[in-house]
Length: 357
Image (cartoon, rainbow, N blue to C red; front, side, top):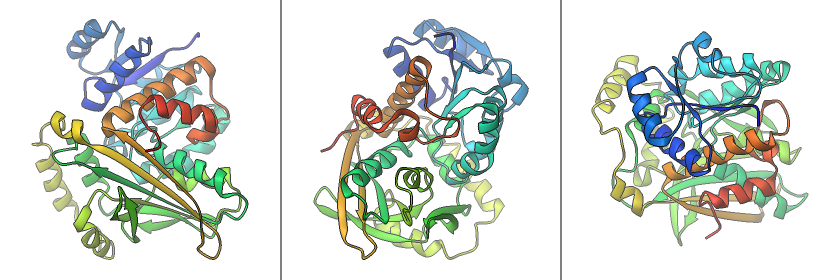
């Protein structure tokens, strides 16, 4: 292995867990960031080298990353802070993974940066965590079972348990994308659609759970696995009884910038880390259902995992280590199944705790 794994965000919550997951796999990533003192302390504790660089500066990131390297970033909100690292990876022809769950950034990777990455030989794997690897994997497994009649895939994400599940960074990202255009797959093409525009119910743990529509990787990935697929919807079930209100709000104008700024300031006062006790009780549930042209259910896949942050860290660590040791298939904006193969992804996800119930 001539390349390195370079990790930005290791002094944050998700990035710190990702660094630990990489070390647990016997990999010593280069921990990169602006705060040399905090990085040095973390590097000494984990036995990892460090480098001072600014993830928001293309030239700074480019100085660390070459074509044989794997760049991993967990620094968000990605709409505001993620563009420079992405551009640096594309320019270098490197492999890139991130932890974003932001639909506009996902769409930028596939539609805007993907063609440039094909030209440079870069390999882009956006949203390689709890959002949206489980849905791509569940959808791919369900499509394999469904056969040739598959025309539509619905994917739902849900959490069970109680308590403060989310980190400050997650809440800040959710506020940052409020009112931003989402996307869906309709009539075989990715189309703009407001987040929350569609509402449907899934059966999760034996009871009905509502979810509102969001854009994800699935709308780009699943049609690659099943050419001719007409519809892909992804639903987020984190809002519970408030899902109806989120759905209704999707018809309203985007929130004004001052309101989003005020909400962002409030989010900045939240604890950085979610409650460890809440995460210990939390489980993630992903459901993928495949239908034919007439709405007949052809296949259903259910996957579960503990603690979505642990899942994200372990998936990023597996993906980065696998990319460094075995490479990935293809160039440009890639999906997890296309990059690693369905069986390898299933096994890697299972090792991270994502399994059938």
